[in-house]
Every structure is written in structure tokens, then in C-alpha cells.
Image (tube, rainbow, N blue to C red; front, side):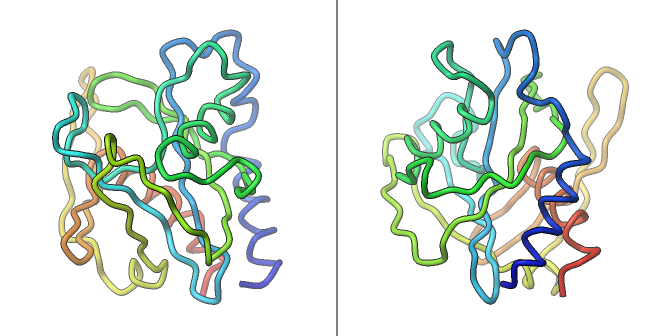
Length: 191
């Protein structure tokens, strides 16, 4: 993909979540990393969590997890968790920016970061945490992967979030919400 595409993403993200790493405390926060491949037809990377896990078992997610005290920032959390889960070292990822934080059904505030990776990366999955990794071409979302709108209520506020179906995978809930935010951001300059 041309450099104008990536610069446009960085510029759009810059206005989305300024100061995300300047909070006084990150305790109780989590971070995820939505990775886009740098290829002629960019793809978004997703993981399928292992079915034996206590939290979000069998769900489609982005790599990520809870902030730990040795993480210097939430960006560091996203990079560390991505390395632990799918084997990409931080120097293999260009963090382009962040989307606004979102709260999960369980009440965790999660900060979604967006990164660019080479198209030819070799992933090393942590099979204790993940069943598999898959990618979805950005163009596939425009061709109609959305199958329904889910409605969630939290503290009396009802939110509508799309759900997507790709091959044998269902992308819903928090991950679908972040995906929809990212797709909306990309829609204005991606063809």
C-alpha cells in the first residue's frame, strides 16, 4: 500500500486518542493492538482465544491484555502482549496511533492501538492462550461481512455494535466495536 495511505491513517488516529499514555495510573486498564498488514491488499489480524481460558474463551480478539506494573505505558502493554501471544517483537510493529478507549462487558477500560506490520511475518502462537490466528482483507468488510447489529446495555446506556462473519469466525462484541471504529476511520480514504 502506498505511503499516503499509512500517513492518512496516522493523521486520522492522532486526533482520536491524544494523551493515552499520559494517564497518572494504568492499573486496571488493558490494551489491544489491531494490526494491519502492509501489502497491496491490507489485512486486519485477529486471534481466536483458546476454549479453556477463564475469560473470553473461544472468542475472536485482537492481541492484547491487562497492563502490568513493569509496563512503562499502555503502548508497551499492547506490544508486550502481542509479543507474548503471537510472537511479533515490538521492533516488527510500527504503532500508528490509538483509537478512543472502550469498556468491555465486564467493565475493563481497553485502549485499542493500531499498528502496521510486514505482510510476510511469521507468527509464533502461544497455544496456551490462542487456538489460531487469521486475517481478514479490509476489502472483505466492504463486501458485506456484517451479519447483524448487537445491542448491549451498560449503566443504562444502550450501544449498537455490528457483528461480522468471516469464514468460520464470528467477530462480535468489543472486538467488533473496535473493528467498526477502525473501518469507519479508514472508509474516508481507503479504496
